Length: 276
Image (tube, rainbow, N blue to C red):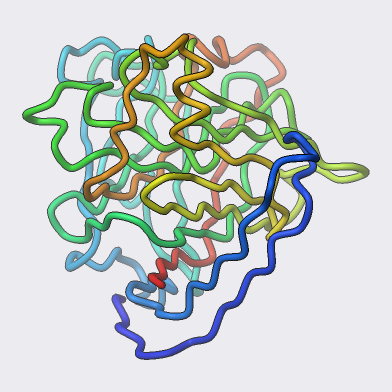
């Protein structure tokens, strides 16, 4: 359910980046206005005022441009709400020409925002071929074809790398395999054995990435220019919408193997968005 909250104070003091230049000046950001919140408290169904679905194998029937193997559905077998959690379940089954099913939900046309803090508390599955993600797409992708519309990946995870997640940005001159990206590695823990909070703070000239409130990456306009020899464009100046999905296979994770267990579920405790 969407809840519009006046003031729910969240003050994040950003410490030294664990994966960035230690000499880089750090920012202190305060996002204290909770403007969107889904605690997944409508038993059995998503809030249709907030979420809709991507269905099928992609607009070109090509695995969403990544050679993914799943067919996305809106069936309760693949996406539902139980006991205060969103459950996105990938299954191995023959369905409409695919050998796997899963779900991809989005806030396109329902909730879109430029700038702020976007966060979700998530537990992910495990095994070769799993590719869950929490990410944003520019709301102008229908007019400005990707990557011109921009993409912000708050969390991408490969099931055969259970201690590691990635935070990335895609735009003209730095997309797909050339995205600006960094990984965050857990010490003495795994992302599939418990919940973790994946967050992103976005302002007109920077994007910060967090795991459990640890800042591990900052991308700025200057970074984009440096990483692309002056050719990249900063396209993060308009509203984006939220996507949560579990892909199976594709260019990045590769296909499942004989040890991959199905079905498995990505469990989402909440999604929250703040403004300054």
